[in-house]
Image (cartoon, rainbow, N blue to C red; front, side):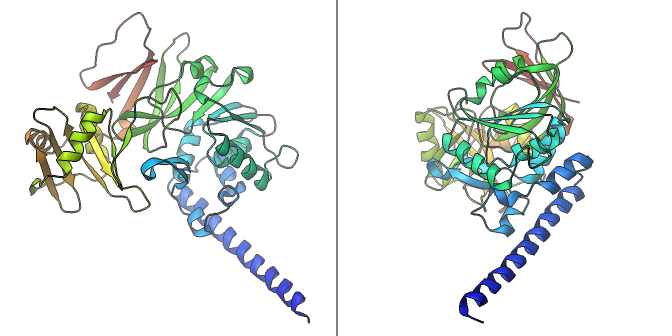
Length: 405
């Protein structure tokens, strides 16, 4: 047997081995999502079974592709993620919230790798329609290549037509409206009026909504008959790359120093300089009270205290520090929970440390599933008072009433 034949035979064997490994890893991911209760809908499970993630992450190792994690595909200043393939469990959660039906017309804001669009195309079937918009032409071009690689075509599979567009998703796609389902796969600070205008009266809008510093929830909104407001029917915690473009809202992630980012509601250059100076000082440290697991305690802190912040190091092994930052020029202060060391650290004025300690003493926390969010157009004729057990967040297009059931 000549060398060419041997090489060809080895290639066939290696190809078969890779296919077997891919099948096994893919099946494990599906079973993992099902084990978490995320694929109870048989149609959703069939979609994840039919659409293989490796087609949308061709340059990524298979073990990572089929791990239940987000995969960064594009970064910006400071290593900040600007595009990614979302964590499959979050994708399954949001698709369950959206609940697309066969024949539905769906608008997706944020193309990502095209993986979510492919799942949507499977769920709505050949009689449905999927329109995906992204502001970055490089992203839409790559997503189209991935969809082609995966063979997502109406004539080849029982899937919907997928139209990829480059443009500002904030404006929707009026020429393709109305939509039965609209899904934002980018984090948003506000909701676009165009989305509500282009949604059918009985439609569902799902969006990852930025509440306060680093606190994101994915909410499924529906509209009561004859009402301009949107009301959530399900809320869950999440974390998403933010919308880009003129409607992105204030900067939420800023580079404090190389390798260190901060998530904040708002910070200007002078306040950022104060934060840097505080971090260069020696903090007062004290033993921390028992810190509840998860994001619930910080979510409550952030809703109660507009100057809550998180510090984090980007990358797969990022470490997050959460606390309060008071940018008062005369008496600035910073207080952080050091979870690994089980300590509190106070920089500058110690008032922030006292406030953080008091919050931990009260033991207040939030379960995202217990939240209800009403989105009321800001030009609505009547003002809404803050409920006794909730919060009001005012944005340019909507005023959000967040309440705890």
